[in-house]
Amino acid sequence: MMLHLGVKPFSDFNLREPLARALAEQGFTTPTPIQEQALPILLSDGSDFIGLAATGTGKTAAFAIPLLEKLDPHAKHVQALVLCPTRELALQVSGQIALLGKHLGIKAVTIYGGTGYKEQLDGLRHGAHVVVGTPGRVIDHLNRRSLDLRAAKTVVLDEADEMISMGFKEDLEKILQATQHRHIWLFSATMSREVRRVADTYLKAPKTAQVNRTEMLSSTVSQLYYIVRESDKPEVLCNILELTEGFYGLVFCQTKALVVDLTRYLLGRGFAADSLHGDKSQEERDRAMKAFRERKTTLLVCTDVASRGLDVKELTHVINYSIPRELELYVHRIGRTARSGKAGIAISLVAPATRGLVNRLEYMTKTRLTEGKVPGRREIAAKKLGTVLERFSGVKQFARAMDMLGPDWERAAGDMTLAEVIGRFLILMVPEAFEEKPKEKMLFTPHAAKPREHKPASGTHHRPAAHKPAHHPRAAHPHRKPWKSA
Image (cartoon, rainbow, N blue to C red; front, side, top):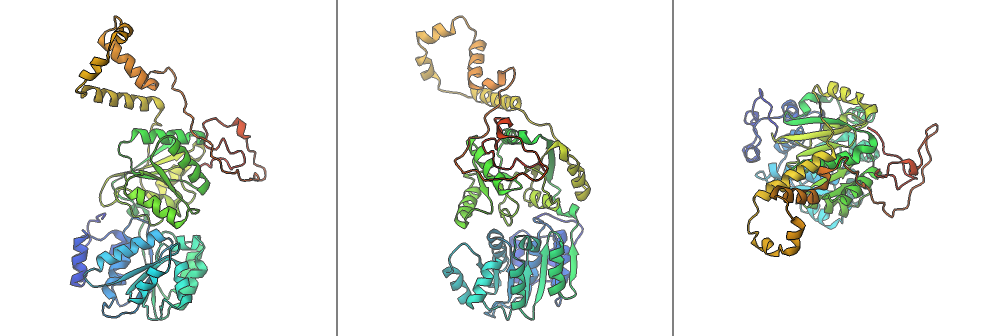
């Protein structure tokens, strides 16, 4: 947990002993900025509440702690509902509530779409103090009469801006209309016009806590950017990955189509990559997340919406394939690394025409981004060469190799010195380290997907596919949109 100095510890909030014990066991000692502001309000007698904070700022605990403090473990009806935009976030929130409420005997049930009803129905029938769910499946259970929210005293809207942007506004309103005599705690990264309308309609005189953007950022995250032509981004991304030891992170793209193409390209280049986007089934998403958590894949290419609620620890990197159109999302993205006081690196690939966005990010976050030197093929080759030389000095038990060096090898070596022999083998093993001009690699192998029709926007000229560089990931798709800049 990111520490925030100068505030009172959790032990000063006079929480129930079982809850305080669970907090200590989870390593919660000092509140983050959003917790520092929200807890005194939410632990009081009760009021509607608006909390503005990004992912990674500790907002789950900001509402889970007061929620658990107020719940009656002896009552067997649903006392609180937490709504989340995605299944992943719902599971993350439910897991956090279960951990913090374990000594209280609090039961949290998670309900979400894309899976069967049996387990969810069993959980609801056996009594749930807290229900955490996605809006669509909550509506389904309300229609089935398997979920009764009439006695719920608190409704939490987690990531309200995302739920609305994903088209859940009508579902949210139906759910809020189905709950009476309740307080609403709304948490959002931004206060868009639609979020404000929901708040004005359903919240009564809400109290507000807001974390400024500088407090949203971890002090242990390093922010870098590279100025890169759009057509060069795939190759530069691969160079970054090859130069980074132990890479374990996320690459954010603007569109699902870009996620698909970039993932195929990375797989073709031999990287352990997978993807998350809105067109994937729940089973595919589960499989991708399981492999990523087990580090069978070490790189996830994803859209912003698909990545909501990813609860993966110890990510080393977050890469913005391009800076998001909504700059607020930048804080969300990079907040997924450098957590719990650990170091992390956030890298943005910035097209020359959008260099000004870096200045806007620096102004918005009140932090400096460091411009890096774009890594090239020669640097990759040098690294490979260094690895070979390092391994060379440690080779043992080479007697068998000597036995294989017969007359043919002796004739080939001729009068070469030992250094010349080693040098020739290095050239064979890492040829790119010795090329006058490193060759470009083919970046993409066309897949068999049927190209989608695309009508260019009025006044926009699109070059024919034949004029695109051969290594461009979209070169094989003349009907697809070109790669978008940041």
